[in-house]
Figure 1: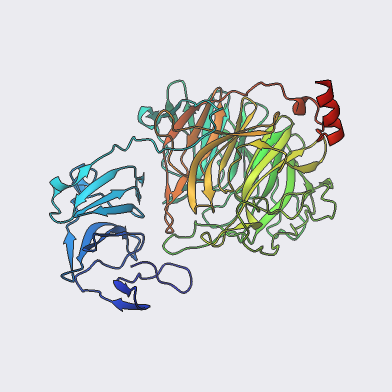
Figure 2: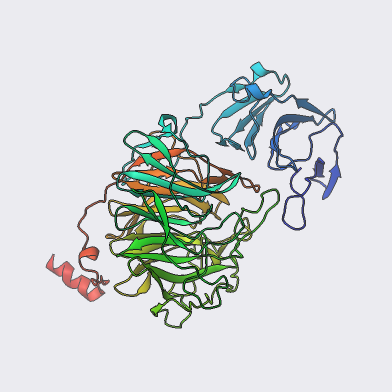
Length: 580
């Protein structure tokens, strides 16, 4: 079995069984017509030189399979276990239900199946199946779904209490979605838009943490349905700002929208820009998966993907995937009082310094189609940015305001790190800081300490108690989604990994989630997880996490940023030893 293609896209999988003679480099087709159907992502294991087991996988129509076959090497024939009925899928006394990419091991006539993916998410069950009898009573569940996945974390960071709020919610529950907008105003959490199986959305919800209740809001003049947009709380403490994204027609909206949370009325704050990003106009070109936050009365926007940033995969529809050919590197800010855009630079000048200009003739990002870099070593090439003065073009990054500066981490772009298992994606794991008082970007790579996150895109960031928080995303290191949580202390310039699973299971692996902080809680909603075979499954669960506290410790480096340590010479060592 497996996937057979010349173009790298899914096609009909082969279903032959091949045998390799170890004494002669020769393959022999020993397929039988009564064997398993064509599939990929299945479990395949041998037992005692007697049986070959095949379990589950996915067929050419992306249907998940739960059938179990074993091939008798002595008799040269296939035997099949019947799939369970739908009503007994999750019963402990059934064959494991429809799992893709599960791990299997065999012992005698038994096959052990662990993990894998189905429509509900990632599996943590361990099953023992007797392949001879194939009876329901012969399948035993050995572990519960609530078992925590073992992981290694920084022991210096205490575990936080995280709660799955989905079973405690009241009111109008939002549907599953990904690439949504989520932010907090006062003690309420607001959700707008996103993408699910029906397409882009423009519904608006408010969550009240005091009573665990969602409310569907009927606000006037809403923005068009969209996903991949930016959404932040305005500095006035009573409104929400939305910019960018992609709509149902595949176009990129260009207005800044403001929602008054008291009157529940939307308004357009900015004029439309020119549809052609290379021509002059009163505002920037549209974009999606950009970085966005507010700072000192301005709405800052960095990078994102343009109109050509769509990569279609089979059976996934029009709203799927990424490409890096249209990534941007421009830094913009919108004056919320004057209601006008300002262009701060795109790194195209040799010095990398920003050149402030009132928008009205925004330059095209000159690095959008930058050359494709070659694959590089994971340990030696975490930061592939060619410039030390300006971040490389990218989208799907995280950007937040903290301590009078903007912090940006990760993303993807043509100058990022390429991995053989993630075609069409190039990842960043770099951390940058932009302080308006200095007017320039600062590359923090090599200056931080602690345990930094790996390269990733489509992760989520927020700020709480002076800490920059990073959750999840998709990484090329494993070609998989993540569910890890990191904090960055900008005072001590230190990364820490927090243990989300010490007291039970936390959120499943996912990307493109909504993440925000309200009071002393961090809230996470939705997102999607990528199964690895062109399937992205939107999520609709809500999680609440007790916010971590900033660690107060004496730091000479923080108190004296110009302090330098020198290595003592042999002569100095001799004098010190003589004094002692």
